Structure formats: structure tokens, C-alpha cells
Image 1: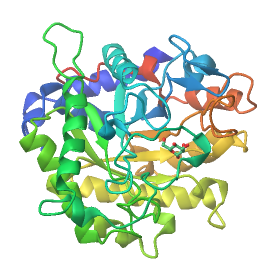
Image 2: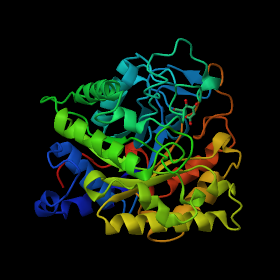
Image 3: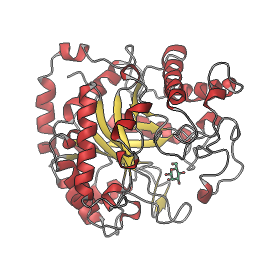
Image 4: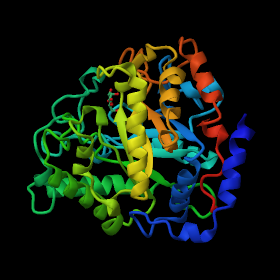
Length: 399
Ligand code: BMA
């Protein structure tokens, strides 16, 4: 199966001449070679494949925590996911652990390991509120993740942290801290080049729940924040191993799909475009045909992204606790395959599998061994379109 899956992309990649490679236009024209190559390969492969990703996959699963070389996806299929999601929340504070207790030194090692095996990493950032949350929280209560001071504290603050604002220094320090982390992702392969990262900051802007979201911030403020973030990392701090992903909340919560673009920071500031959606496929918005609805949203995303020269993705998705046991094949796969354009997303990422003993209960999005959805996930992966890490060609070599 692995061989069948990789045969076509290798042919496609070898047909892509170096001129095409040179013409790739990224947010960062000085992006490292591996970063540019990742973009080109994702852009080629999405015509035939969808890479599957999972948040925090190596740190813990529903029934385990901290085991070596483990992942619920790997337990079920024999392979790690193709895409690894991690979150930088609390790195800004200088904390050793992120908001879900993942140690940042371990995260770094897991990111580098994944790269060495050919996997791809995307980082989100549930950073604290810069005014009310500028301190490492004393206690960790997984049930109080939306507490005051967190990313979910919606007191307006963007103007205070941009140049001239009362808290600009705090924010600049926070950017220093994440820039240091990006700079520390040295590969182990000789020249120590940096591992490329798909950075997905300021996500779900069209939702009401974050301090950078639609409840607390005007589109102009958000766009200033986004551009300032890019310019600070790229131009002031010399971070050149990032692709930038813009992923608002689902189209299904917008009055008008066009509103998705009200917050768009511009073609010069975005490499990858996607949305986050947890409820459409389970019928959560009352659509008569949820699968068809999801297909239409993917199709719109893909066509709009392609028109802008960007890569379309499904930034975050999943069904909490996978209560529909054939959700992966009967909902997600059907939606992706419902239209040729819809199937041209490069990847999808499902959210984390919280450990039931130490973290939240029934908060998981990937199957684990023994869960009634595991068999269906194997079928999902058996589809030639869906790739895990073992199915990947070399994502980091020049086509
Ligand atoms: C949310 C939940 C929280 C978690 C946060 C950041 O969706 O999973 O438990 O703290 O994401 O990862």
C-alpha cells in the first residue's frame, strides 16, 4: 500500500523542473530551501493525496501518557501521522510546558524526529492574554482552559501590544521567545539547517472566543497584528523556516462566505489558507446534507486559494469522542471525495487525544486501539488518497 501511494507523487515531483521551483512566491522570499521545497511538494501532492495530521500525537493518548515512540494513530495503523500539530501556548511566558503540559524541550525533539523521518509539523499558538495573562499560571486545571488571562479572555488588547501601545514590550518579548524556539529547531543532518514549520497563528479569527477574534478585534486591527507578527519574525528576528497559514473558523458560522476574506492579511502575508470545522459533518449546524455542505465549503476554499496561488488545507477538524463510529469514511472521506476541487486540500489535522486519567474526559479526535471507530480509521487510511507518515515521499528534497 505504501508503495502504491508514493509512486505517483515521485513521478509528478521529478517532472517539476527547477524553474517552477524558483518561481514559488512565499511570504518569506528568504525562506530556507527546505521550507520552499515543503511548499512545492505539498502543492504538487495535494492533487492526488490528503495528508492526515494529529495534534500532540506523540505526547499522550487517551489511555497512556509519556510512552516512548507512541501515538494513538501509530497504535491503530502502524504509522505516525503525516502531519504533526503542536501548540506553543505559554512559550511566550517562558514556561517549560505548554498549556496542555507538553514540555517544550520534548516538543522540539519530537519536531526534529518527525522531520528526520519525513513528517511535517504545524504549530498553533494559544497564547495568553498579554495584559491579564502575563505570568505563568500557578496551577494547571485542564477543566479551566478558558480561564481569565488565557487566549479565551476576550478583553480587546491588540492596539495595546502593537507599536506605540502600552504593552508593546510584552508582546515583543513574547515574539522573541517564539522566534528563539523556531531558531532552535536544528535538523540532525550535518549542516544543522532548521526544520521547516507551518506556523498557524491567530487562528479561528471569525469565532468570538479568542482575544484576537471577531468579538474583541476589528478586521483592521487583526490584519495589523498579523502583518506585524510576520514582519517581526521574518525581518527583525531573522526567522526563515516558516510557512504562514491563515485559518479562520468554519464558513458555516459566517453570514456570508465572503466575510472569510474581511480578515485576510493579504497575499503577501499568507502561504496556506484553511478553516477549522468541528460541527458541520456531525450535522451540528442543522444542514440537511452535512456531507454535501462540507464538500461545498472545501470546494470554495480550494478554488479561492488556488486563485491566490496558496495551498488550501483543513486547519483543524474532527468529531469529539468519535461518537459516529464511521465518521472517518462515511463523513470525512465522502466529503473530501464529493468534488474534484474539494479533494485538492493538502492536509487535514484532527485535534488532540486528551489522556482520560490526567486531562479532560472524552476529549479525543483520533481513534485508539479498542475504540469502536478504530476499524473504520484503518479503512480510511487504506484509501489511496489518505497518507500517513510511512506513505510519504521525501517532502524536503528539490523536485
Ligand atoms: C482546546 C482544548 C483544550 C486545550 C486547547 C489548546 O480545543 O483541547 O483542552 O487546552 O485546545 O490545546
